[in-house]
Image (cartoon, rainbow, N blue to C red; front, top):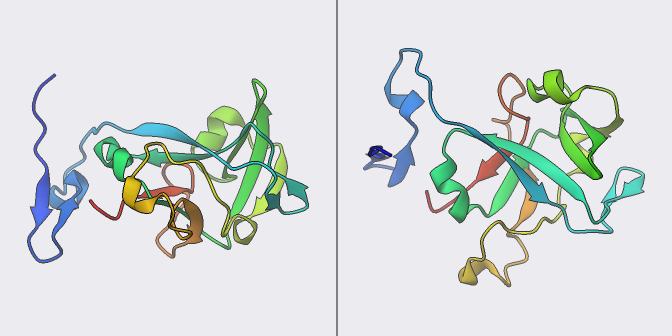
Length: 156
């Protein structure tokens, strides 16, 4: 595997995504990630089960170890489908819906706010932080790419 440069903004002291630097169409790596929801949480009129996941898509997979929150759009329509014994949640109008389908239980984005999920990696400093590993609203969440769920890693 070759080397991959990470560009940094000296003003913000954060990593800058490649697509923020280059204005030409680039093929970049991207991954879909399943974040396991904590069980027995109210999602609309039903509770989350032991196998409920919210799906996120990212073009910066190297930031996943620093994940501390997920962002959704409170006015976006999400859908929960059952596939291989798992309940998967993603935006109804996302490109992923073309693969997995748009038929399932519809969930309003605002019904996902505040829900907790299990961290992908344990970050000791956030283990007892009641604000970490929750779903939040963000205005920048869109459904034209990915799943309508944005993974957030504050340390990147």
